[in-house]
Length: 633
Image (cartoon, rainbow, N blue to C red):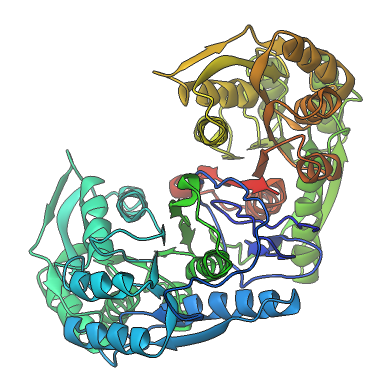
């Protein structure tokens, strides 16, 4: 049976059916040929993925019904509606592929433990086979879940788990996301020159695990600072009550306010707007009302979760369970990630028409990756010029990765009148003299993908160390699933000087620390496919159990070598192209870490336009992580 690739910001999951999924981010999209999901504008950090499952026969679970219920805390928030939308999208695709799933969304009218227990019991009585549950609290519903599972019902948690075992949990790493919210607020306060003052938190309650974790993470960002937290106010996510609580904080002179869910955030924003936008507000979740408050300046940002993906993936997993399949251990706990949503998709757009010449200079023009950065630049230029700007854009690069040739391209761009250069530096040191000369002539530098050791206006890149670690964890999970807990690992890298690929390898190796796996000496092939294949083939003859390619060319070479060897080695790579997708489909590669180069180009060009308009890139936008996705079969 044909399997199609589908992408998620944090993972990719297989299903024994033809399924697709796309996630549009920040003006560009990551998608398969046929389906696109709701958009999410992003600066997001990325996490690990799940391993593919073999096809199995479709046999419903014998002890329970064949219906799938989504049971949320209530039905008031747009957030729950987005989970429902994801479920419905998966149901429609399953139906188109020949699998019928009867799906029902039910919830209490308000957040109430007893009412949610009643809804669970009613779903079981009505023939639920699988329940996708956002638990109102960690403990209250456990008895109901014990009774449900005793009758053969399978539980999948979406957003908020209970303290009871489930088949799968799809949720945000709320502690990490809360810390990101805190760091976002601190950056904005620092930019205003505010280094101390009172901070207020409007939360839902003190028992729901997800919102408690968000507040914990938020507070942790302020540890060691001179800021003072007032006592948290609880408003059960009600907008009016949250506004009253936030208004009370404003009267106490707070400099920052945090809302821990959609209703809390809307209430916080309304209170700040009413007070004249004098307080920095950061929230959680997204809705039309929250977006308006961000655009109005009442809120700085909100941590946008991916509830549609929770619903979508949860339904895919429910379908697997109803087909008699088991969720593998590597897919038991999935972080569906968070994005920081600000005005104009993550950075403030210029309000002044821009005019000037912008160059994109990459390491070479051979890889599809650089073409994707170029595509993002072109998209931004089209939008900016349509809005009244006049930007002349040129993409240039050496024919091969070579320091001297890249320096020549930089010098030529400066001589040709470049005012802003978007640069993917071939190495951290080699081009610094050329950059010093360029900036001495007034040229502004923005790094995309690979920075040099020279100050720039902005850096837009992947957190390559974290992404490399995700690649390593992905490989370990697959090896463990095969029963392989030791053996030789080979790495095919570009060179030992380019910061981005060095960081990827560092992160990859860190995932194996404390294990019984042994790393062979890294082989460098300058990203050339043929040379990378030769290096990988050499590793295969030495009996490696896993191979990692650190960029597009390396990954393609690794995949080709594994394919030629009969697919016995686990291959994980970096970047994406048609050739890499084919290797994943053929089983020669397990997965690749897909960056978001189009976003680098798009956001880099927006920043270039701001610079040309005489604006300054704020400190909070100086370093942007454009995130990574794990692409599997």
